[in-house]
Structure formats: C-alpha cells, structure tokens
Length: 359
Ligand SMILES: [Zn+2]
Ligand SMILES: [Zn+2]
Image (cartoon, rainbow, N blue to C red):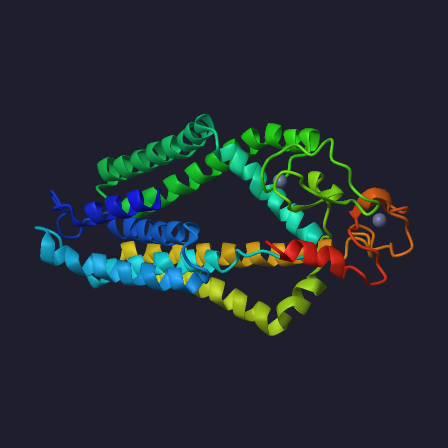
C-alpha cells in the first residue's frame, strides 16, 4: 500500500505538466503538494518500519525535497519552485505532529480500552464495502462542491479560486465522510459487546474464565485480557482548571497565539500578497497541528482518568478504593457509573503490569 503510494507520487510529481496554468491563475497545486507529501509521511510511519516518529519524518522530508528538486531536471514544463517545496514540507510537519500522538500505554485497562477502538476500526476497514462507502461519502461531495464553487466563481466573477474551492470541498467531504464512519461503526461496536473478542487475535473469549479481578489470558495468542475491555468506560470531563494544570497558563496563551498566527494572520497575509497556494498550505498546517494537540490532550485526559478508574469515580469523583469490584468491573454507589479495576488497590498491581509489558 505504502509502496504503491510512493510510486504514484513520484510519477504524479514528475509527470510533464500538460498545460500548466498560466500566469496569475490560482491552481490548487500547492495544496496538492501539501496533502500528497503529508500523506506520504503518515503512510511511511504506518508501515511500522520506524520505531521513532521523527525518523519517518526526516525520511519523508528528504523525499519531499528530492522529489521536488528532481522535478525540474527530469520532466518538461515543471519547475521546482521553492513554494512547492515549502508546501510539501508543511505537509510532512503536520503529519509528524500526528505521528507524535500515537503510542501505547502499559496500564492494562488503558491499553485494552485503546486496543478496543483500534480493533473496531480494523474490523470496519477490513471490509471493502466500507471502504467504498466511506470513499464515496468523502470523495463525491469533495469533487462536487469544489468544482461547483470553482466553476461558479470562474464564470460569474472571472475569479480563479482553486485553493479556496478545494478547501471548502474537502471540509464538506470530511464532514460527510465522518458521518458515514459513525453510521457504519455502530454494528461493530455491538459485536464487540456481544462476542467478547480478543483484541490481539480476534478469537471469541466468551467461554474463557477470568479471575476475581477480571484478568485472564487469551488461550489462542496468550495476550492479557481484562473484563472491562468489552465495555466503553467513561472518563471524566476535564474542567478549565485541569486544562490549565496540564500546560500552565503560559502554555494556553502560547497555544492561542499560535492558533491566531497559523490559522488567521499567516494565511491572510499570504493571500493578500498573492500566495494563495502557500496560504492554504499554512492554514492546513495550523488546523492539522491544532487538531493533533487537541487529540493528544483528550487522550492524556482519558488515560489519566482510566488509570485511576478503580480509585476515583470518573463522573462524580467519589472515592472508590473501598468499593468492592467483583470480576474487574464495579459500579459507583453514588452515580451508578461503571468502573474497572485490574489489581488490588493496595499495591501488588505489578503482577498484572508485567503481564502486559511482555509483548
Ligand atoms: Zn488472542
Ligand atoms: Zn460516581
């Protein structure tokens, strides 16, 4: 998959630019560079060839610069413009921000909850029909909206706004595509609750006995499992105070400044000076990096909350240390929220920890 993409990308960037847009015409070329090389970096990372995300980033960066530089040497009608390279690099940077947010925790309950999401996603994407449905839900509106806006502006006002049209088109497509994913994922969720699969090998564990703390081992693959892994555990809603504790007020101010510069001032300034392509690439970087930060923050919050699941209620924050928890899942006496515990609270959780570390 990754190799096919890399080959396609090289061909696409070196294809003789047939009828390159003339002077002053705004083609979504920069945006394509941004998306293509960003996607390249992400796919490279997903091959699992690199342990550290920055290794994949560096290679993707080198590839971007190389691909852009050889453009002018190898093909007719194509020029390696600094702006193209810049757009490509921004794409790789945004992808890197996302890569840095992936990684696993060793706490059994957290690990199983995260594996559960990944398992459902894998199941969903394992069906070609779903690929087609999601692809169509994303692709058709993207093309339709982009073309409509572009042609309308061109015919009515003689404006060429390829980048803006494509941006609006992509946003529409992403929303409709996400709606389709949400619709399709529901039956897979139910199946996990019903079949109790092992998230490492897929085998149903309905018949497998778990101990008093809800711990067990998959007989087929030997991975640790916990009774709580087939239910969605709730995690606490963080208050503004917790958000501030996370990065401190300075962090929050930095984030806001960054957002203003990356999403508002930068693109507008470039748009004014006629660099619409680069403006949209920077806008995408700003949005992409911000989303990565929000995602990371949400996940840290969920992890912390889940790690303390057996000690403090995620919803009402009641002390749960003395509440009995048979079979690994208990219920908060105050608000009836479910909680999970995989080891006795008074230490001795190391045995369960070690079981997870060995994979
Ligand atoms: Zn298994
Ligand atoms: Zn509670």
